Image 1 (tube, helix red, strand yellow):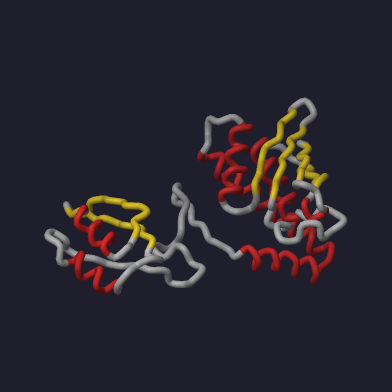
Image 2 (cartoon, rainbow, N blue to C red):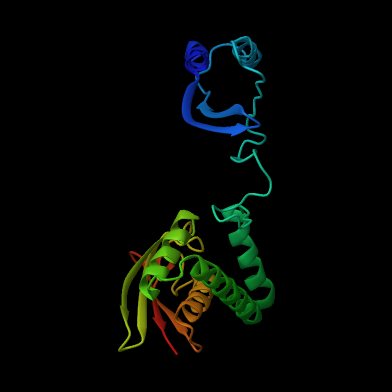
Length: 230
C-alpha cells in the first residue's frame, strides 16, 4: 500500500479514504481520491500500480455524470440496507408546485396526504431500528436524519405532554429554501403533512394537527411547526 500511495503522490492524486477487505484470501483495497490536481494520464497511473509486486489487478472508476456522486453500486442503500434514491431538489419542488397549480386546493390535499403517509412510513421504519429509545430520542434521530438528507436544518424545541404539544423549528426547509420572503402565508405544505404522519407514528396516536406559525417564505427567521397530539 505504501508503494501505491507513492505512485499517487507522484501524480498529485490525493487519497481521501482507504478501505480494505479480504475476498478469497486476497486483499482488496478501495481508495477514494481527489484527482483535480492530477499530473499525467490515468492510464499511466494504472500501469505503474499494476507493475508493483503482488498487485494482481487495478480498476479505475470515475464520475459517470457531472452531478452524480455514487457510481459504485446499485441500488443505493442506507447502512441498514434499505434502498434509497436521490432526487434533484429543483425538480421535486417544481413537481409539488405543478400539482398545486393544476389541481388547486384538491392538489394541496393530495400532497398533504401523500406526505402524511411518507412521514408515517419513515417513522415506523426508523422506530423499528431504534427500539428501546424514548419517543423524544426517536424524534431527535428522525429530525437529524431529515437534516442529513437535505430536507432542512431541524431542531426539536420541546415536547410538552401535558399540553400534548411538540414544537419543531427548521431553517432552509426544501419547499421554501429558494423563495424566502416571497409569500404572505406559510408555504411548507408537504412538510406539515410529513410531520403529521411522523408524529402520529412515533406517539402512536391519531388526530395529530400540525400548524406552521412561522415560515421563511413569509420572511420569518425560521419555520416553526406546532404539532398538537390527538
